[in-house]
Length: 121
Image 1 (cartoon, rainbow, N blue to C red):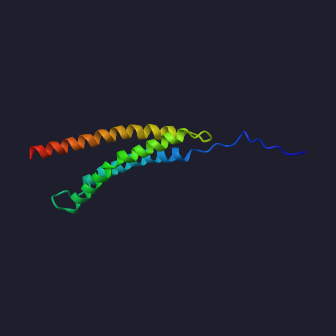
Image 2 (cartoon, rainbow, N blue to C red; image 1 turned 90 degrees about the horizontal axis):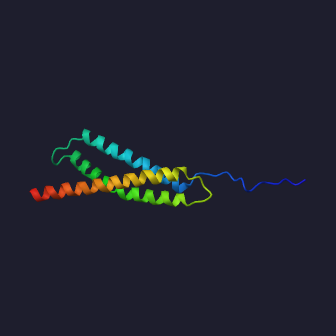
Image 3 (tube, rainbow, N blue to C red; image 1 turned 90 degrees about the vertical axis):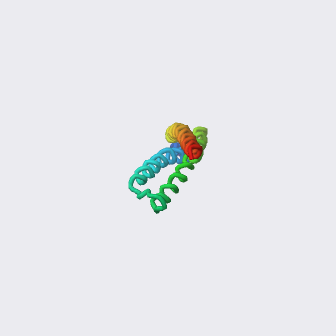
């Protein structure tokens, strides 16, 4: 007798795009929290190393909405992979979508505050 293998029951694995989207959606907010906490412990007097580090952390955090957009794109791409599990893609898409909107709002708020500070001077 010949052994027959059933090709219809292939074990599904998680979509790599979905996992990447999920990792971006989880890691970036954790980094933002670490940036904020480290800002409290830095010496932020004028022309100090702490204020320079805080400025660099602020500029890096301004790129997070762009990275959340990348995560959102990866998550959407992971949703359309037919032969893979989509759990991480769904969670990553939702997380990155929410954090993208929050990040855009915070960047907009930061630029409004900075521009108002320039007008007052």
